[in-house]
Length: 237
Length: 182
Image 1 (tube, rainbow over the protein chains, first blue to last red):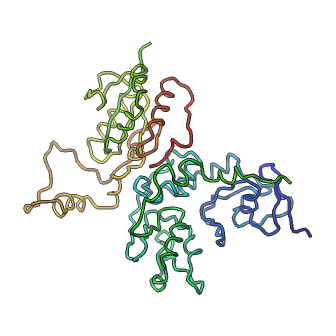
Image 2: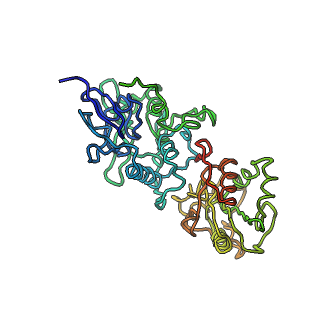
């Protein structure tokens, strides 16, 4: 059995390595599948459903689906994009996302997806939930108003024994991500910065510095999210 | 043919969006050729003297006067446009939405660090003053809004393109750089 598999995304012939996740395989072929809770190098969760694609007629999350021979994938199609757009809009109304006052604005993946999908206003009523800002940790601020519960920090930030420094607290609608009180001390300066970079929104903010990149030079000021993948030079098979 | 008529207002906003309208620079000369202004802080006309074609709304609704003005705009304008984050989602004033009114007033008039002396604990209560609403509302939760221009403030180019598109009926150019939430 060959190590390589052939599949198509919106009719374009692609090649991937057997067992590779669809979103990664597509990326290597210059095809961008939008993601939010997924982060390179971190175990996928399939939580946000932004990467939903239609594989051989069935909706699946591209970040958790291994690529297989002769897969026919639909990605940039109207109904799926509409679905993704609704998820982004729901995330915007479900939290308190005051972009003009957020330090992550311009580098925020949620915002960048809204730009990419040309969202001018969510179609759902704003919820304005009452949430707290937790500034008790000496190195970081945990801004619960902006947290989208993607679990990226829980999955990516671990101490030397592999234990997660961030954790879920409570359940269901009251669930929130907090710094584990027992492991909080192990959040070094370096890890705190990594946590802020891993966070797709502005929910983890490193204390005592901020707004270091001027408007115009931020990550998504001039180029839409995913355009780096789409503009990549790919060797045709 | 008479020129299309534009009205503008600032509700619970900071006038930044109006500043951004002025930021179209010399195109403002083209603009006054293109449209006529009615009720607006730009020409200081206080009341609608005729029906307007386009109403630009800056800011959300934080008090009863904002609601009154917004409904007046809806009655008198054919097309209403929410301009800026505050009109679209309440913006910075909406940060009070999770805080009780009593607490807000106490912080402003009794406990705040800039309060010099208010020993009798008086809150402004003149009947002339508009009533504060329980929270700040986005404009489209009060009246029907036809178009939305995000930004804080929306880039001058976005406002310009939108106005020209509305007036001429052409399709709007929307380059990636001009649609931003901050």
